[in-house]
Length: 116
Image 1 (cartoon, rainbow, N blue to C red):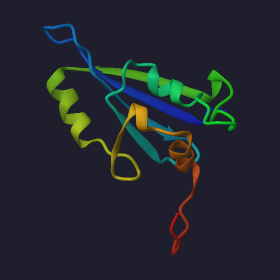
Image 2: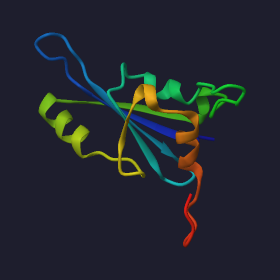
Image 3: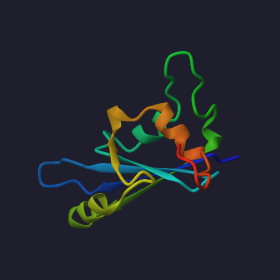
Image 4: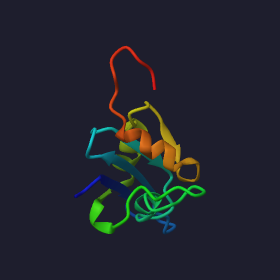
């Protein structure tokens, strides 16, 4: 069963050969998304799901639980998408700041009248 959809949006290489990426990790359980800005490479956001924090289990145990897709855009369109894409918390996060706890929050269903 697919638990997460990871959509990485990349910009075509510029004149200096630089390529830029951002990713959106979406929980299939709740539909909530987390936006990861300045991803180092197309597969990095997917690998965040397999990272362990201390003694905790990874978020997914098998590649079949992740659907990863990549799209390519011209630099100007990539910049527009990168600037306007926000996660469920209304923010974007840098790859190094993303924790397993942040991704686990995607699976929490909001209850009316209470705060997480």
